[in-house]
Amino acid sequence: MTGMGRRLSAGIILAFCTAAYCEAGSFEDGDVAYGHGDYVAARDLWLPLAEQGDARAQIMLGGMYADGAGVEKSYQTALDWFRRAAEQGNSRAQFNLGTLYENGQGTAQSYPDAFYWFREAADQGHAGAQYHIALLYASGRGTLRSASDATKWLRLAAEQGVAGAQFDLAQHYAKGDGISKDLTEALKWATRAADQGHVVAKYDVAIMYANGHGTPKDEQKATEWYRSAADQGYLLAQSTLGLRFSQGIGVQRDMVQALKWLTLAFDRGDARARKDRDVVAQQMTPTQIRLAQKLATEWKPALR
Image (cartoon, rainbow, N blue to C red; front, top):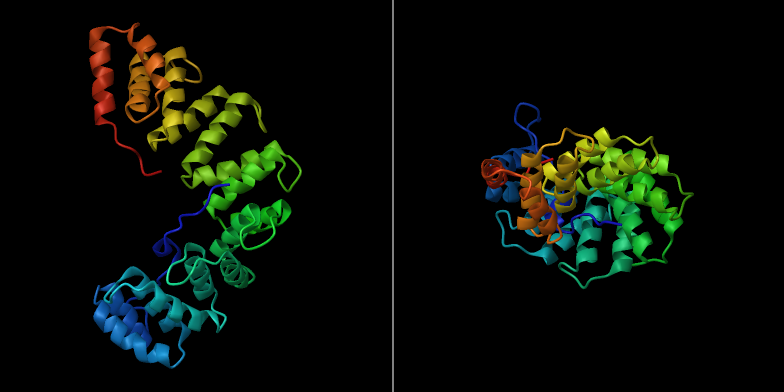
């Protein structure tokens, strides 16, 4: 299974509002100040509220200390504020607290504590926490390993649109891990992740179409998915796409494109592409080779 990004800033969600949509008030004024980059003013507005028990303000202050926004970065202080909000039942704070325990930030690393707080948030429907619970069940960290429980929580997170959970759920279906093997379901969930830009999911979807797993074999669709993954910079997709262009599999044969993609794959670390690149180059004119090299030099990865 693949894990979510472990950086806390990626897990902490800071919500903003503008004066046009917020009623006057200290918390809302702090929101506006934060949105305009005036972190000191935001902190000064939120601190009294947080000390009075306002969970919203406690979460925002925790995020500021975790990110070092307007204050000296301190995971320990962030943990203290998140804990106050988490103990009031706030699922976002519970998730953030679980993340700190999982990463050992501001406290000793503790998977059991991470599991506890993720479970508190997950039971309230927090999608990120549901995904983290699945990962802990799958690895046996902080709890007994259970493929069936991992699959259960992956499904809940996947149904809420978490791309990583969708991809991992597809892997469970493909391998029959914690659930009956079902390649059609594997393709369905891998495609949902791929549609959100998950590059490894795109590569897997391409393989499934190329091999007819969970769907009738379709070389054109396979090449389209390889191309999408290659455009994002996935090395295996780039080398595979180069070979498909050289052989005209699922796409019109194009030696310039073939050399471009094989050159990119080799130059970016796929040593296995060197032989294929050289074989393709031997079948091309100097003008074609120069064009392919130019295209490879000018290539930039797509965002998704």
